[in-house]
Image (cartoon, rainbow, N blue to C red; front, side):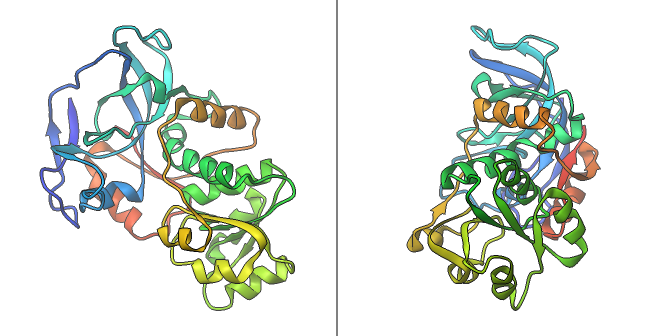
Length: 306
């Protein structure tokens, strides 16, 4: 099969290669997926730079990518949940860094796979798993509900836009930080937008004079603002800043979870959640996708379409 690989850590794209690699082996309880789309996430190039080396084993050559949507080609022994031809999606992170989704084929544990919603095209489904599951886990951990005022940092981004929609679906009042060019988009999602930069805490307070009851940080570096706007007894969580734990917050690390991914699919089928795709790239242009992701200004998702 064709895939993108790298054989050493690098902070740039210099180690990325595109070419033929062996097809993946299919074990018990696994499904072999023909990749139709694979979402790009900042963690992909951060992992390539060695960012998770203290935490996870790396086996070179590495195929990057943790998101996938595609068609089941085959199932391993004792895997009755799926059959060839099923359209599926998965957050396909494994226990080591080696066999990712920027390839024509990938094997994934059946426990981490869910059926693709018919209402999403392949690119949207490929961009959903990691971002959607991160947003869902963040709101679940904080117990966000209809009595909450939820502040979302990065409300126009891949994860933030889904957290906004999930918060609105739960009945919360949602405030979202975004650049001014994305304010119309954030309003469309159902949140009140506020601009980044100096005075953001005051702008949030103007919308929530009694403070916000929950803060979802998908940007990092926002703890000072969080502490300034959080109401007494409020909850805060971050995917980017572990120091929130020192202030009663939660550091979120999303897990592969087919059941939770299927839960997201039901929200999508109800029309309460969609996936904004900013741009798609062919498999041989992963480097360009990484460059776009590094800018930090993407509205919605970047997706590889082999």
